[in-house]
Length: 360
Length: 262
Image (tube, rainbow over all chains, first blue to last red; front, side, top):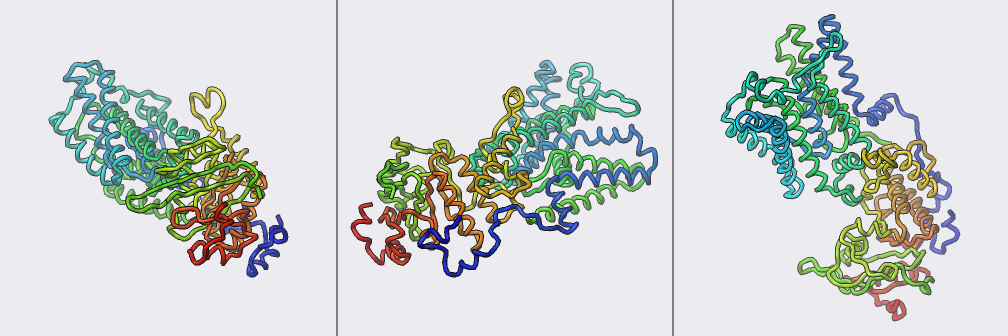
């Protein structure tokens, strides 16, 4: 282009010197990076790398200090069983956090759904599949209410779900009369509710159907987030909602869908929870909201939205599981688990902030 | 000039009120094929309301807009986009964490053929990346290695380039650019101006909103001066000086009859 010569009103006097300067402004240059910068760029591209490295290191650490007992197929699959519920709720939480939201009511939705399934199957005498369906519907409804308040009424997600957390938890206790449905009763009347507690063995490794369910859910969520337009829009909404809207993404519809889907996933986790503990207890899973946020954050998903991954969340849940079981087998005070998980959260957020400061 | 041809887009008697404030007061607008039309005006003159009415971001209370002679009434920017009117917003409307290719196709992704696309809703990444790369190369923006690079790792000028390439790739009728050089340094501004001329060479008419008079006078074929909610006049940048334009814009000087008639 030779704008300078063809147009009468060419560049300004002060711009003349530019003619001799480098014209490749909009090229994608690669100046040499320091090793630290290359690490930053690599982590920026694959945010699940940090939790994966921490997971591997912690497994190696406990294999060394605890010994062969820790590194057995049985123990390692036991960790999977212990984190299955947190993993499922964490998948839902990841979707929400990617949109720059947060859902504090996930644990309450999960328990309420499981209680509804139990009550319908045991007290109303409906067939177990119908009871499960009603439970899933209740979960969807809870999520939908969150979604309406956040996407349509435009209230902050933290406040909305702080409120609905209390509301859903209270409904759960009022409705169930704080009554636990015993495992034996379920077994005789509605064994379907305990389905995900069932297990099979591969050598020394023990897999429950709950673990399998979590892995399948993670695979589906990974696929949807990375290989469908809807998934890319989840990231875009969390990244910059205004830009997403101008690019043609229906932001409020997207948020409504994400919170409703979160409710459904939590209800599925509620079903798996019955299998995990055997009975239906309104007291169970009280801290799953905090556990899921912990898994999401340690998994490298940014609380500011727009970046993170399902894989990271699963790694995050596993890291917590490895620390919990490893420290217990090592014979330490359980408080050390709390302490190390707390430290991991802070380290994870620190690394996230550093990665976000990336520059060209 | 290009006046002999029929305009691509015309607006007549647009009115837009926000409560007691009248942002558009019987505003007219004409865009001809292949031209760069600059729109200038003082702050609050109603430039952005005019542009938003054309790009579908606001619906005017009164008046008529015609695209290729056919009346149109956009209810959202999406509808304007579908009609072939692309807008490069001042904030660029890019998603920083997503890749260049993902950004270019945000909201109109290409899906794979057959079962994968129909039932699994799978994106056709190779096709999207190829088209993104082709478009960037065509506009001379590409000495590239990595189309899957996140937009936030690009410089301001590069981001502007991606936004312009997106508009040029999908705009079949016209491209609206809102202050494309406002956030850029001198050198990057120059590249973006060349890019605007490149897009024009491809035959797409451009509406350029800018406060930068030197830039406006450098690239524009005609200058639409907006004042007090309506079109005051349209001038030829070769026949008037920048200070004339500023004087018309602020009301310090009354434009001659000939310009008013345009």
